[in-house]
Image 1 (cartoon, helix red, strand yellow):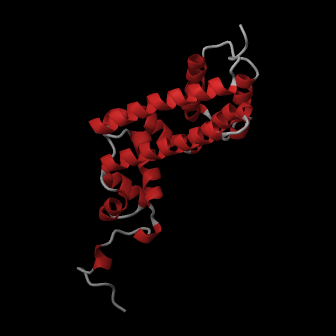
Image 2 (cartoon, one colour; image 1 turned 120 degrees about the horizontal axis):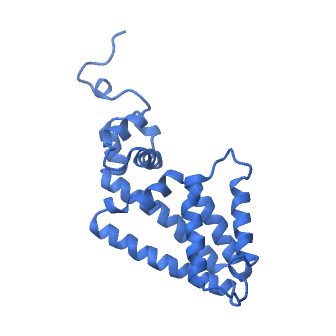
Length: 206
């Protein structure tokens, strides 16, 4: 039996997984990992295609160009954060709203470690319009968290802006140091930090 003709589509296709087995989610995860490890400028579309064992045309058809990949990574983090904020804002039990936000945000960041790292360190590579939109979203998200803190702890003695800063700083830094091999699970870290906030380490009355 002879193989495919030299100029046939089968012969021209790069070896590896069939394109139908690669999803946009796979592409975003691979791009985020490489951007995080090598830097955005140092990563090419060919690098991403090679990591997925697909041809570059398949990559472009699934996720667009490199800038679009970066924007999609930012959108993934923002969409998750918006969902978590909305759930906290809608919580009927105000005493649980902040705990819900802290736990789910820590889980979201840690489970999307590479994307979170890219989100925090690669905004300068976004087009100007996307940078402006990202900055506006960040300001609004911060104020939404502040309002959730005020609703959950109306009698707290510490400025809610300070508490919001402490919470967001912890969430942003967690992907840098958390290890699955550590003594505490991700869930335990999230619950312990939420308890620290709720039990008065930051919200104690003056």
